[in-house]
Length: 400
Image 1: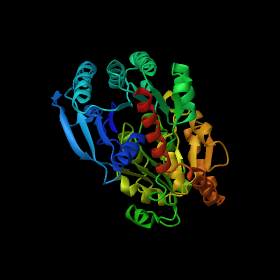
Image 2: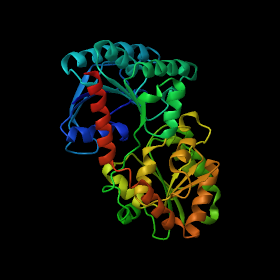
Image 3: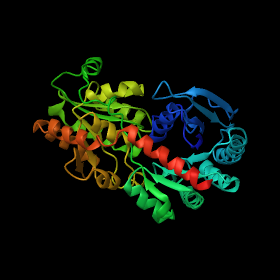
């Protein structure tokens, strides 16, 4: 198959998501993949350019070295507000160009604006279009007043889609409420590399590198550090635990909006050596970081809109490593994992640390970790990729 992917995030720099795993694995199965992406983090550049030319990146892979994906980044006008107009026209032109030159057999969308354009153009050209939901993206639009416009574009795209795929059951309910046809909607859950994420891995070297003793309680989070991730609240709770200062450690891998705030909390409360911020790390090192932890955390604000219907892929990776997860009561997570499967729920981010310490002291972490691994063993990337491949083949066949 020739598959064209459109998204409004940085394929190259952002952490691997569902689409990276699926597309790289399909590439290994001899399918041709091209991705149109967007430099979403351009505002964070130290030396901002007002305009960048179209760029093409060949032989791209983030996870599997044998993968071969071409990433196309259309020209971008990097001026606030005007960036959206630039995105509209540049991506519309690029989508038409790829249809002409690449002649995709199916287009898969993960965004809002370029995905709306791709679905509309695909319908006119008689190309099947698949809309893949891993997030409720309009809730991530920085300007709250225009989120309704993002929602409107999503609704239009759902109507123009040949098939709609969501990453979990809660998102499937959400998109059907938004207008997706039930008979065209299916769930393909997150996958996990059960060989790479192996509970028998040893985290000794990571503990040694970051000065963590064998007797330390190490609690772990990885991913993009949003302000609503709850990590600042966890760090402030850590600062209150003076009696635990020598034993409780919070290990955080990743960067993002809350990174500087966390650094400031560490300085203000003298948490050096206790609050460990590693920044971004190579994906191949992530299993070792998880192996170094006793318990993994997802302390996001439970009332944050973007967190209501999603199940972050990191949860599957934590669980595959045989680590229990303590999370706030996020509806999508609770629907997906239920009770007694290695996921423990609390009401607020402030309660996460206390619950984690209770679990370790009661010597229940290993028991819950075994339950977690057992639950995710059915989510191997091999079976998830095969299922996704079948959906694409079916939707192409329906168009012939």
